[in-house]
Length: 272
Image (cartoon, rainbow, N blue to C red; front, side, top):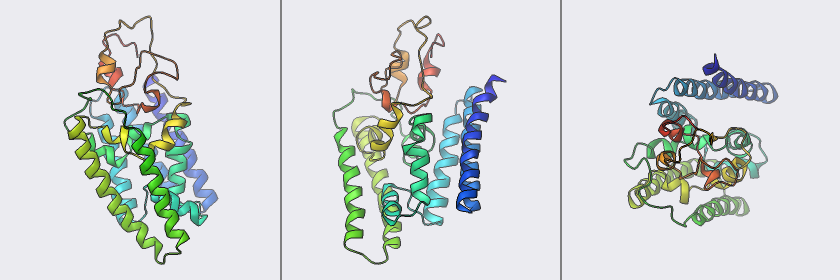
């Protein structure tokens, strides 16, 4: 029974969001959208609790491909940061604004940076590269993410200030170009830094929203100090270089945790 409590709770949260948006927006799409994502995430968590080794990858593909292919390319919705600014400046509570509110602004108060570990379509591809854990210490390049965040804001702001026509088409084109850039930078960075998650650590603008909110996350991985033997296996297994042996919210790289559970799997004493 313990193995279905968390998946059921997770599904209930997303279903509550789905029904609320369906009724308030009078649009059945939100019922399907958040129900589907809730089912996919709940399935992944259930498989993870059953110790199925590919559980997280299944969720990444189910959610990532749905958002990239269906919402992005087929439905022509810009779900990147530019799409968020576009709808926000338009004064419309739709699409990317709702997505960001649920997954990247308020959602992290509940599940931290779970988005990065289970749903990001960029990381979905990067996690298949060979450097599952970083081969060298983290570089002091995190400032780049703030520059890319600012560039996204300035780009969309300029379109509105210049009153550019056919802005919806520009948003779709920027979604395609943006994804090409994300994948190109992400793959190159992975091989340069020998770290699949280098893009997440140094370049991804979305983390500007995710990091401060995930500091207060309800769901966190904690260490039972009575079981921990200080072997360091959890730190070596963590793709984001988080110190999981420290339970304080100020632990090293604490807001970088993507809840991938690699540290939990690596712990020989089940201390995490």
